[in-house]
Amino acid sequence: MNPHSATLLRALATLRVSEIRFTITRDGDAQHHTTPRALTETSRTAAQPFPTLSVEDLFEAYALTPRKGDYTLRVADGQLAYEPIAPRKVAKTPVATSKIVRHRHVFARRHEKLAA
Image 1 (cartoon, helix red, strand yellow):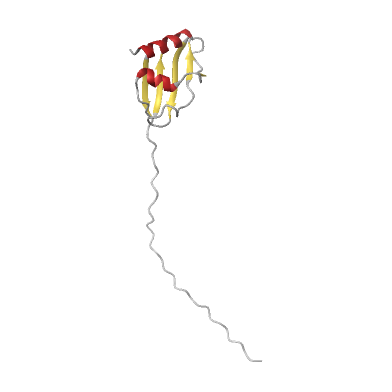
Image 2: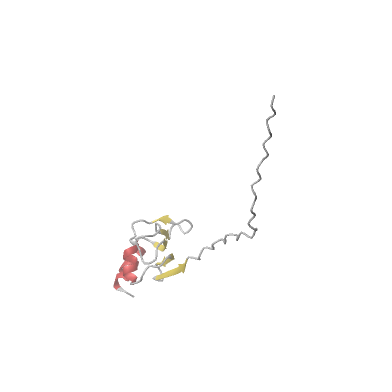
């Protein structure tokens, strides 16, 4: 394990953090992420925002390149789990199958004026 990651894990264990989750929103850029949410040992049911964690430092400590997806750091194991985001399905546009209809312009007959 990298010494930087061991230091980070010890600091998180001191704060009684058991798990941290966040999402990277742009490939290769650790600056674009959601706010990390931490599960502590005292409140295992609700994750609390943990904005003081530097996601850039986390990737640097683990010597990883950030990829778009969900990340979970388990402090007890020291494991940083990655789950890619499922690609969105793109709806196909319906192809126009109707025939092109050409309308003839019909000129209206003018009524002739009758002489009075």
